[in-house]
Length: 463
Image 1 (cartoon, rainbow, N blue to C red):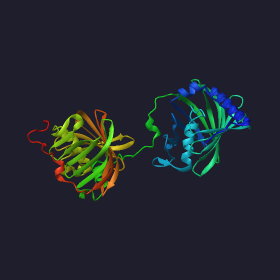
Image 2 (image 1 turned 30 degrees about the vertical axis):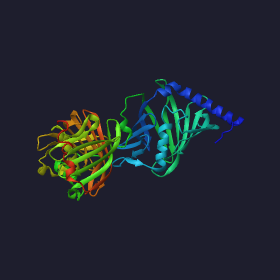
Image 3 (image 1 turned 180 degrees about the vertical axis):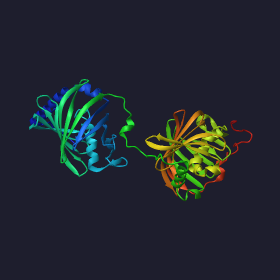
Image 4 (image 1 turned 90 degrees about the vertical axis):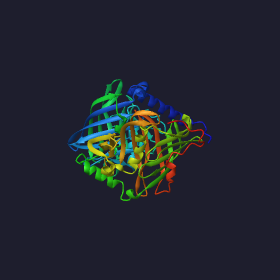
C-alpha cells in the first residue's frame, strides 16, 4: 500500500501528541529512568464498602502483573502472565483462567498500568483527542488502543504532565461496565513520580487505594505471575495416595501389554524424529534418526544396549549395568509399577508435599527390590508421575538423575506422558516429546534383544 504525505493538520496533531508524550515522560522521571525499570512492587490498603484491605502489586517487564488483596482472610488475585489472564475471587477455592473481554482488559491493564509504559509500545495506538476540563483542572485527553482492541482514555495534566485520570471498561462480577480511576498525591520514589492515592469509581461507589511502599527493581520470582497448577491434599495418607494413583491410570490400563509411539527427541542440541516401543514387563526400544544416522537405545528386561554412530558406536553394544536402572524406569512409570508395589518389591513411604514446576505433588520415597532409592512425585490432583529422582548413569553421564514427566494423553485406556525430560546433575541431556501413541500395537519381541554383530569375524565394540 502506498502511503501519501500527512496533511498539515495531521502533521500538527502528530507533533502535538509527541510534545504531550515527551512532557509526560519527563514529568514521570525521564525515558532513561523508565527504561531502567525491570520490576516493581507496591503495597498499600484499599477501602471497599467500608472494609480496609491490604493489597500488593507485583509487576515485571514487559507486561506481567499480579495484584493481591486480603479481604478478611479471603484472597483476591488478578494476574496476567504475558499471555493468559487469571484470577481468584474471595471465597473461590482456587484460581481460574479469565477469558473473553475481561481477559483482554487485564492484558491491556498489565502494560498500560506499568511504571515503564511509554505509549509507543509495539501494537499500541495513541490518539490525541484534545483538551478537557476534569476534576483536577485542564488535561490532555489520550485515547489508547491496545493490540487486543481494548480502548482506554488517559488524561494528562496540562500543567504538570502527570496522569490525572483513566477511563476504561472492567467487570466487578456484574458484567462489563465503565470505571474511572483518579491519580492523586504524587511523590518521588527513586527518581520516579508515583501517585500515592488512587480513587476507583464504579457502580459500587468509590474505592480509595493508598500506596504505603513502592520498590523499583526488587528481586522477583517470575513464577508468581503464572496461575498455580495442581493442589495437593495434606490430609491424605500413603494408602490413599497410592489408591488414587492406581485409579488415575484407568480401569483398562492393566490390560495393555504393548505400546508404540512417535514424536521427537531433543538430544545434543538437535530435535529429531523418534519412535518408541514398549512391552510388558520391562522391554522397550527407542529409535532416533540423527540426521540420517540411526541411533538405538533398547532394553530387553535383562540387557541394555545401544547403537550411537555419533559417538562411534556403529554396532549394537551392551551398556554398563548401572545404566539399566535409569532406562528401566521408563517402563516402571509407563506400566504403573508403583500401583503394584508389593508384587514389584517396592517399599514406599509418604514424605510430604513438594512443588514440581507449578504443581503441588506428593513425594513418595521408594526403595526398589534391588535396593535402589528413588523419590517419586505424584500430581496433587491427577496422581500421575510428575518427577522421579535417583542416582544412576544415562548416555555417559553419571550422578543424580531427574526425570520430569507431563502432558499425559489417553492411549486406549493407558495414560501416556507426552513429555519426558531427563537431566543428570541438573543438566538436561534428553527430552522425549511423544505426539501420538497406540496401545496394544503389534511389536516384535525380538526387536528388544541386542542382535549379533553383522560379521562374526568382526565383532562390535566391547561393552
